[in-house]
Image (cartoon, rainbow, N blue to C red):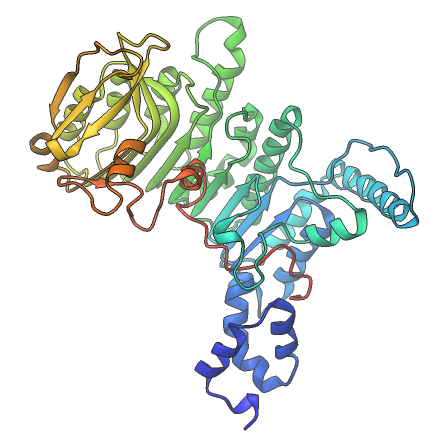
Length: 486
């Protein structure tokens, strides 16, 4: 009995034990095996693909789009912010191989400068996207995936296509940029990606700016949200088709009328105008920088956000007043799921806010509270105090750190079970104390995030999942290079 006569289930068991090169060689054995393997192979390697805005990487994307058999499988396109470092390094001290790699690196630099300055990256993206008619998700990343140690087939990390070849030829890695240059690079990738999707009429449903490495430093330029008046209709078609939107907004400081806040006022207005063209969003996730005052920002953009259909709202890494947050939430009449991640109340208390939420949002079915804080009166080192949720005793307690303030009194008790559980079927709370205390079982009246909510785990890496991404990467669609695949 030959391999080509094996039942499909047996053949799949065989292919599951092969690495990428071996899998590719198996497909070359005969047309019968190639036909049997093709669907599983294409789903694994081409459902999700990651590329950098370099000529060699985007050329692979164009080649995939031109293949009428493979291109329909690409559903999720990831554009990474890694790139050829444009600073000129010192030449190697010795070694013929090192000198050859250095010369090749200089060639890559010259190519990248020309590629970017002529707009060829934008043109190649448009060319490829026009043929990717099943691509519903567009994502921007500033990291290489570490999901389960990389793809299990090859035990490697997920990188942009061509990254491994570049390392072998140039003797160095693609880089995500220094702190000083990352904002410009991420802003450029964002603007190019959105513009190309608009020009190609990509049938997007989901857009994700998944920023993990630089989430605490980023401040996107206001120009990334600029929409040319002549292209408003085409942008409205693109954004109007979106159902899910995730972005690290990157605001720095409260907005005032002073001249030094002109940038933030301009950016806030541009973002509000941008989001007003997405009236059909069902899921919205916005993150700021840790501790950033965000009340004025959300007061400005709140009226421009989709109100009638938004069912899932996730806010992370910000400080906001209770009044501003209640006003924002009250605008969304169809909200079913709400998450607060590292959100601190600069005025007010979570106890009163939760009572307002439960009374104003009749449709709310799931509430997640992750490492939330509020301003406290008795904290010696900082006026920001942690909020702990004593769900087993059916109350919410807000208190200072007892190790710092031994005589601290507990205040703001709230009847968690009767006030919230009666109207919100699922309440998920998370903090280090309760995760450690309830590893095996969740207390009555709520769940501990970390014990499992829709498959998400918010430990140290899980917190990064909230910063961007979709609650856990499915990186089974490719590995670090896959030059052997095409």
